[in-house]
Length: 257
Ligand SMILES: NC(=O)c1ccc[n+]([C@@H]2O[C@H](COP(=O)([O-])OP(=O)(O)OC[C@H]3O[C@@H](n4cnc5c(N)ncnc54)[C@H](O)[C@@H]3O)[C@@H](O)[C@H]2O)c1
Image (cartoon, rainbow, N blue to C red; front, side, top):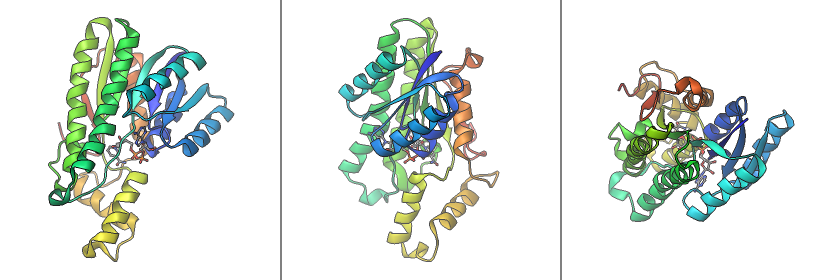
Protein backbone atom coordinates (compact mmCIF):
# COMPACT_ATOMS: atom_id res chain seq x y z
CA UNK A 1 0.00 0.00 0.00
CA UNK A 2 1.39 3.42 -0.94
CA UNK A 3 1.86 6.02 1.77
CA UNK A 4 0.39 9.53 1.73
CA UNK A 5 1.25 12.41 4.03
CA UNK A 6 -1.49 14.99 4.66
CA UNK A 7 -0.77 18.36 6.27
CA UNK A 8 -3.52 20.32 8.01
CA UNK A 9 -5.30 17.00 8.60
CA UNK A 10 -7.10 18.27 11.71
CA UNK A 11 -8.92 20.96 9.71
CA UNK A 12 -12.16 20.82 7.77
CA UNK A 13 -10.64 20.04 4.37
CA UNK A 14 -7.60 18.14 5.66
CA UNK A 15 -9.71 15.69 7.66
CA UNK A 16 -11.89 15.05 4.60
CA UNK A 17 -8.82 14.54 2.40
CA UNK A 18 -7.28 12.09 4.89
CA UNK A 19 -10.60 10.21 5.23
CA UNK A 20 -10.81 9.84 1.45
CA UNK A 21 -7.16 8.92 0.90
CA UNK A 22 -7.32 5.96 3.32
CA UNK A 23 -9.30 4.14 0.60
CA UNK A 24 -6.08 3.84 -1.44
CA UNK A 25 -3.19 4.72 0.85
CA UNK A 26 -1.76 4.29 4.29
CA UNK A 27 -1.96 7.87 5.60
CA UNK A 28 0.12 9.96 7.98
CA UNK A 29 -2.09 12.73 9.36
CA UNK A 30 -0.22 15.85 10.49
CA UNK A 31 -1.26 19.21 11.94
CA UNK A 32 -0.29 21.68 14.68
CA UNK A 33 -3.60 21.01 16.44
CA UNK A 34 -2.70 17.88 18.43
CA UNK A 35 -6.14 17.39 20.03
CA UNK A 36 -8.23 17.36 16.85
CA UNK A 37 -5.54 15.40 15.02
CA UNK A 38 -5.64 12.61 17.59
CA UNK A 39 -9.47 12.41 17.41
CA UNK A 40 -9.58 12.22 13.60
CA UNK A 41 -6.77 9.66 13.37
CA UNK A 42 -8.34 7.49 16.11
CA UNK A 43 -11.69 7.49 14.31
CA UNK A 44 -10.07 6.42 11.03
CA UNK A 45 -8.04 3.71 12.79
CA UNK A 46 -11.17 2.43 14.55
CA UNK A 47 -12.76 2.01 11.10
CA UNK A 48 -9.85 -0.17 10.00
CA UNK A 49 -7.76 2.40 8.11
CA UNK A 50 -3.97 2.17 8.13
CA UNK A 51 -3.03 5.54 9.64
CA UNK A 52 -0.56 7.22 11.95
CA UNK A 53 -0.41 10.80 13.16
CA UNK A 54 2.14 13.29 14.35
CA UNK A 55 2.20 16.97 15.19
CA UNK A 56 3.92 18.93 12.42
CA UNK A 57 4.33 22.66 11.95
CA UNK A 58 4.81 22.99 8.20
CA UNK A 59 6.57 26.34 8.56
CA UNK A 60 9.54 24.65 10.29
CA UNK A 61 11.93 22.50 8.26
CA UNK A 62 12.89 20.30 11.24
CA UNK A 63 9.23 19.61 11.98
CA UNK A 64 8.56 18.66 8.35
CA UNK A 65 11.59 16.34 8.26
CA UNK A 66 10.50 14.73 11.54
CA UNK A 67 7.01 14.07 10.10
CA UNK A 68 8.44 12.31 7.01
CA UNK A 69 10.61 10.21 9.34
CA UNK A 70 7.56 9.19 11.41
CA UNK A 71 5.72 8.19 8.22
CA UNK A 72 8.64 6.10 7.08
CA UNK A 73 9.05 4.37 10.46
CA UNK A 74 5.37 3.65 11.03
CA UNK A 75 3.88 3.21 7.54
CA UNK A 76 6.61 3.15 4.89
CA UNK A 77 8.13 5.53 2.36
CA UNK A 78 5.93 8.49 1.47
CA UNK A 79 5.05 8.66 -2.24
CA UNK A 80 2.05 11.00 -2.12
CA UNK A 81 1.69 14.39 -0.45
CA UNK A 82 -1.39 16.54 0.12
CA UNK A 83 -0.57 20.03 1.38
CA UNK A 84 -3.76 21.22 3.02
CA UNK A 85 -2.45 23.20 6.02
CA UNK A 86 -3.20 26.89 5.70
CA UNK A 87 -4.13 30.07 7.49
CA UNK A 88 -6.11 33.06 6.27
CA UNK A 89 -8.12 35.91 7.72
CA UNK A 90 -9.85 38.92 6.16
CA UNK A 91 -7.97 42.17 6.85
CA UNK A 92 -8.54 45.47 5.04
CA UNK A 93 -5.49 46.20 2.88
CA UNK A 94 -4.73 49.48 4.67
CA UNK A 95 -4.57 47.65 8.02
CA UNK A 96 -2.52 44.63 6.95
CA UNK A 97 0.65 44.29 9.05
CA UNK A 98 4.04 42.80 8.18
CA UNK A 99 3.46 40.18 10.89
CA UNK A 100 0.20 39.00 9.27
CA UNK A 101 1.83 38.99 5.83
CA UNK A 102 4.86 37.02 7.06
CA UNK A 103 2.88 34.48 9.10
CA UNK A 104 0.51 33.80 6.20
CA UNK A 105 3.43 33.23 3.85
CA UNK A 106 5.30 31.16 6.46
CA UNK A 107 2.46 28.64 6.72
CA UNK A 108 0.86 28.70 3.28
CA UNK A 109 3.89 29.23 1.06
CA UNK A 110 7.04 28.28 2.99
CA UNK A 111 5.16 25.29 4.45
CA UNK A 112 4.25 24.06 0.97
CA UNK A 113 7.80 24.68 -0.26
CA UNK A 114 9.35 22.72 2.62
CA UNK A 115 7.13 19.66 2.26
CA UNK A 116 7.45 19.60 -1.54
CA UNK A 117 11.23 19.91 -1.34
CA UNK A 118 11.38 17.13 1.25
CA UNK A 119 9.34 14.77 -0.93
CA UNK A 120 11.38 15.58 -4.05
CA UNK A 121 14.57 14.98 -2.06
CA UNK A 122 13.38 11.68 -0.60
CA UNK A 123 12.02 10.35 -3.88
CA UNK A 124 15.42 11.09 -5.47
CA UNK A 125 14.44 10.66 -9.11
CA UNK A 126 11.57 8.21 -8.56
CA UNK A 127 7.82 8.76 -9.17
CA UNK A 128 5.48 10.41 -6.71
CA UNK A 129 2.52 12.78 -6.58
CA UNK A 130 1.76 16.06 -4.86
CA UNK A 131 -1.39 18.12 -4.53
CA UNK A 132 -1.08 21.62 -3.11
CA UNK A 133 -4.24 23.30 -1.90
CA UNK A 134 -4.27 26.84 -3.25
CA UNK A 135 -7.44 28.95 -3.30
CA UNK A 136 -9.68 30.90 -5.66
CA UNK A 137 -8.39 33.81 -3.56
CA UNK A 138 -5.22 33.60 -5.69
CA UNK A 139 -7.17 34.84 -8.71
CA UNK A 140 -9.72 37.36 -7.42
CA UNK A 141 -7.78 40.51 -6.53
CA UNK A 142 -9.84 40.61 -3.33
CA UNK A 143 -8.89 43.58 -1.18
CA UNK A 144 -9.46 41.83 2.17
CA UNK A 145 -7.06 38.98 1.43
CA UNK A 146 -3.97 40.56 -0.16
CA UNK A 147 -1.70 38.44 2.06
CA UNK A 148 -3.67 35.20 1.70
CA UNK A 149 -4.34 35.52 -2.04
CA UNK A 150 -0.70 36.36 -2.74
CA UNK A 151 0.52 33.44 -0.64
CA UNK A 152 -1.74 31.09 -2.59
CA UNK A 153 -0.69 32.58 -5.96
CA UNK A 154 2.88 31.77 -4.92
CA UNK A 155 1.78 28.20 -4.13
CA UNK A 156 0.51 27.87 -7.70
CA UNK A 157 3.82 28.99 -9.22
CA UNK A 158 5.75 26.78 -6.80
CA UNK A 159 3.59 23.88 -8.02
CA UNK A 160 4.68 24.64 -11.62
CA UNK A 161 8.34 24.50 -10.59
CA UNK A 162 7.94 21.23 -8.67
CA UNK A 163 6.05 19.77 -11.65
CA UNK A 164 8.98 20.63 -13.96
CA UNK A 165 11.61 19.37 -11.53
CA UNK A 166 9.73 16.10 -11.00
CA UNK A 167 8.51 15.50 -14.55
CA UNK A 168 11.50 13.49 -15.88
CA UNK A 169 11.13 10.97 -13.06
CA UNK A 170 7.32 10.80 -13.06
CA UNK A 171 6.86 12.88 -9.94
CA UNK A 172 3.75 14.98 -10.53
CA UNK A 173 2.56 18.16 -8.82
CA UNK A 174 -0.81 19.85 -9.19
CA UNK A 175 -2.74 22.53 -7.34
CA UNK A 176 -6.41 22.61 -6.40
CA UNK A 177 -8.30 25.87 -5.86
CA UNK A 178 -11.24 25.22 -3.55
CA UNK A 179 -14.16 27.61 -3.71
CA UNK A 180 -16.22 28.41 -0.61
CA UNK A 181 -16.43 25.68 2.00
CA UNK A 182 -17.89 26.08 5.49
CA UNK A 183 -15.00 25.16 7.80
CA UNK A 184 -13.39 26.78 10.85
CA UNK A 185 -11.62 29.16 8.47
CA UNK A 186 -14.90 30.65 7.20
CA UNK A 187 -16.48 30.51 10.67
CA UNK A 188 -13.60 32.60 12.07
CA UNK A 189 -13.74 34.98 9.09
CA UNK A 190 -17.48 35.62 9.32
CA UNK A 191 -17.41 35.91 13.14
CA UNK A 192 -14.69 38.52 12.88
CA UNK A 193 -16.60 40.48 10.19
CA UNK A 194 -19.71 40.49 12.39
CA UNK A 195 -17.72 41.66 15.42
CA UNK A 196 -15.81 44.40 13.58
CA UNK A 197 -18.04 45.68 10.78
CA UNK A 198 -21.33 47.38 11.76
CA UNK A 199 -22.71 46.59 8.27
CA UNK A 200 -22.78 42.91 9.27
CA UNK A 201 -23.78 43.31 12.93
CA UNK A 202 -27.23 41.70 12.54
CA UNK A 203 -26.13 38.67 10.50
CA UNK A 204 -25.24 35.20 11.75
CA UNK A 205 -21.95 33.67 10.50
CA UNK A 206 -23.94 31.19 8.42
CA UNK A 207 -26.03 33.97 6.80
CA UNK A 208 -22.93 35.97 5.98
CA UNK A 209 -21.28 32.92 4.42
CA UNK A 210 -24.43 32.25 2.36
CA UNK A 211 -24.22 35.86 1.11
CA UNK A 212 -20.64 35.37 -0.06
CA UNK A 213 -21.67 32.17 -1.86
CA UNK A 214 -24.52 33.96 -3.60
CA UNK A 215 -22.24 36.82 -4.70
CA UNK A 216 -19.23 34.78 -5.77
CA UNK A 217 -20.36 31.36 -6.99
CA UNK A 218 -22.22 31.25 -10.33
CA UNK A 219 -23.77 27.90 -9.44
CA UNK A 220 -25.12 29.51 -6.27
CA UNK A 221 -24.04 26.68 -4.00
CA UNK A 222 -21.19 26.23 -1.52
CA UNK A 223 -18.64 23.49 -2.01
CA UNK A 224 -18.17 20.74 0.60
CA UNK A 225 -14.98 19.11 1.91
CA UNK A 226 -15.75 15.87 0.04
CA UNK A 227 -15.66 17.78 -3.30
CA UNK A 228 -12.05 18.75 -2.63
CA UNK A 229 -11.08 15.36 -1.19
CA UNK A 230 -12.32 13.61 -4.34
CA UNK A 231 -10.23 15.86 -6.61
CA UNK A 232 -7.14 15.38 -4.42
CA UNK A 233 -7.59 11.59 -4.47
CA UNK A 234 -7.92 11.62 -8.26
CA UNK A 235 -4.84 13.79 -8.80
CA UNK A 236 -2.76 11.60 -6.49
CA UNK A 237 -3.90 8.42 -8.24
CA UNK A 238 -2.56 6.61 -11.30
CA UNK A 239 -5.66 7.80 -13.18
CA UNK A 240 -3.99 11.22 -13.32
CA UNK A 241 -0.65 9.87 -14.57
CA UNK A 242 -0.53 12.42 -17.41
CA UNK A 243 -1.65 15.43 -15.40
CA UNK A 244 1.02 17.67 -13.92
CA UNK A 245 1.60 21.39 -13.39
CA UNK A 246 -2.16 22.09 -13.46
CA UNK A 247 -4.37 24.20 -11.23
CA UNK A 248 -7.90 22.91 -10.98
CA UNK A 249 -10.72 24.93 -9.46
CA UNK A 250 -13.45 23.09 -7.55
CA UNK A 251 -15.61 26.13 -6.99
CA UNK A 252 -18.98 26.03 -8.74
CA UNK A 253 -17.59 28.30 -11.47
CA UNK A 254 -16.29 31.14 -9.27
CA UNK A 255 -13.01 31.29 -11.21
CA UNK A 256 -13.13 30.17 -14.82
CA UNK A 257 -9.68 29.30 -16.13
N1 LIG B 1 -12.61 26.67 3.47
C1 LIG B 1 -12.52 27.27 2.28
O1 LIG B 1 -13.49 27.81 1.77
C2 LIG B 1 -11.21 27.27 1.54
C3 LIG B 1 -11.19 27.84 0.27
C4 LIG B 1 -10.01 27.87 -0.45
C5 LIG B 1 -8.86 27.33 0.09
N2 LIG B 1 -8.91 26.79 1.34
C6 LIG B 1 -7.65 26.23 1.83
O2 LIG B 1 -7.89 24.91 2.27
C7 LIG B 1 -6.96 24.56 3.30
C8 LIG B 1 -7.72 24.00 4.49
O3 LIG B 1 -8.54 25.02 5.03
P1 LIG B 1 -9.84 24.70 5.91
O4 LIG B 1 -10.95 25.47 5.30
O5 LIG B 1 -9.97 23.24 6.12
O6 LIG B 1 -9.47 25.48 7.25
P2 LIG B 1 -9.23 24.91 8.72
O7 LIG B 1 -8.89 26.12 9.52
O8 LIG B 1 -10.36 24.06 9.13
O9 LIG B 1 -7.93 23.98 8.53
C9 LIG B 1 -6.63 24.46 8.43
C10 LIG B 1 -5.73 23.53 9.22
O10 LIG B 1 -4.37 23.94 9.05
C11 LIG B 1 -3.74 23.78 10.31
N3 LIG B 1 -2.54 24.62 10.40
C12 LIG B 1 -2.46 25.96 10.61
N4 LIG B 1 -1.17 26.34 10.70
C13 LIG B 1 -0.42 25.22 10.54
C14 LIG B 1 0.98 24.96 10.53
N5 LIG B 1 1.86 25.95 10.73
N6 LIG B 1 1.40 23.69 10.33
C15 LIG B 1 0.49 22.69 10.15
N7 LIG B 1 -0.83 22.87 10.17
C16 LIG B 1 -1.28 24.12 10.36
C17 LIG B 1 -4.79 24.18 11.32
O11 LIG B 1 -4.48 23.70 12.63
C18 LIG B 1 -6.03 23.56 10.74
O12 LIG B 1 -6.26 22.26 11.22
C19 LIG B 1 -6.18 25.83 3.59
O13 LIG B 1 -4.95 25.79 2.91
C20 LIG B 1 -7.07 26.92 3.04
O14 LIG B 1 -6.32 28.06 2.68
C21 LIG B 1 -10.04 26.75 2.07
